[in-house]
Length: 224
Image 1 (cartoon, rainbow, N blue to C red):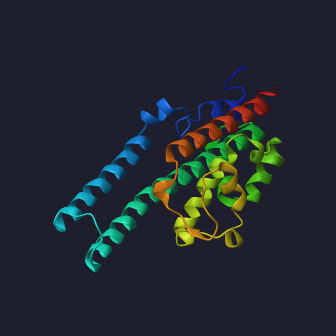
Image 2 (image 1 turned 30 degrees about the vertical axis):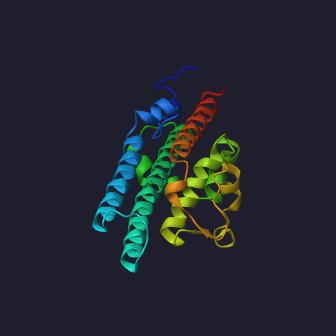
Image 3 (image 1 turned 135 degrees about the vertical axis):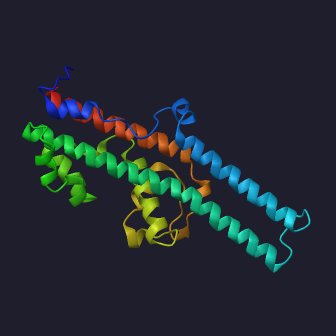
């Protein structure tokens, strides 16, 4: 595959970095790993403080201990959920940059003023409209790309935390299929426990999805 400035869409897409790791070693060397580790360490440190404050006992024996335990749980879950929310933000930003490359490919221009004077495709579409945008402009079915369901589950879990009080309600969000497909194990109509999510595997899955999407689009742009 020849990558040249003469093919500006392909050229800009080729330069687009992946916001996620794609291997376990890559994850272990990433800031995502550092973030999750710090959340774990913070939880352990706060748990030790609570135990020390209650005479060295980790048993729930009174209301104050229960309140402290509930507070710790809420704080920890929020920190884990923040990783998911950040991952979704990265996916949205990646989609935006990919859509910019599609615009460049269609119009054969690097004119950033022309691009920015248009509504960003990824800013004005989402969900099914995003699927349609890729289908109509590139012929790519993003739902058929390997690991799409992992990336889409991140979107779902982010929205659950931000808009649905941490509770997975398929009838209200139309999201049961992505969650089931990933095997994450989130039960319908139950509160999501973000600390139980396989964050490493989900983040790597997001990386593989971004990689697969980019590779498929590069084939389209190069005429392969």
